[in-house]
Image (tube, rainbow, N blue to C red; front, side, top):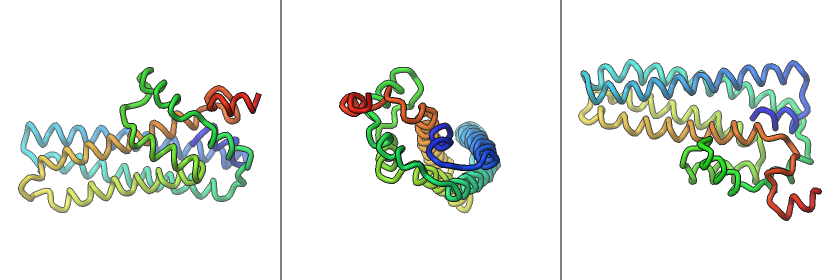
Length: 202
């Protein structure tokens, strides 16, 4: 989380700079991992199968591990800060249905309603710290899938199982997209509140 976390948590200027740097690094690593997995899927389909794909899956695994470690540092920074309690009601009153519909219509969001529901429920119930920690954990879990595939890369059917890795990385990327978009909303702004909540805040 970026803008929201910057105002939702009281942290030093140095911690805020570190959080921005670490989050950006994790995002770039995830993009790189996605590119590697899609290349692995292409190679598995059209060249010499698992042997070629494994090179890219291994690279994706390493990038996801790195991204998870970077987000772990972000979690530690948030843990050292102080959460501003006034943000809780704002998160709980966001109009998540309207946010999702608008994001999909504008091409900002992928069609991933289930993942959006997981993300929004976690944000409402537990807040941005839990979302950030979940992002870290999901990166690690996606890396575990790469590890498992690599362990059986020579087995029959391993080429077709690359598709599962591509699906997992797409889900991971969707979660990251949702986190990034909502975290860039102006904190405490009434624009994306549910109508009743926005009226009450006016």
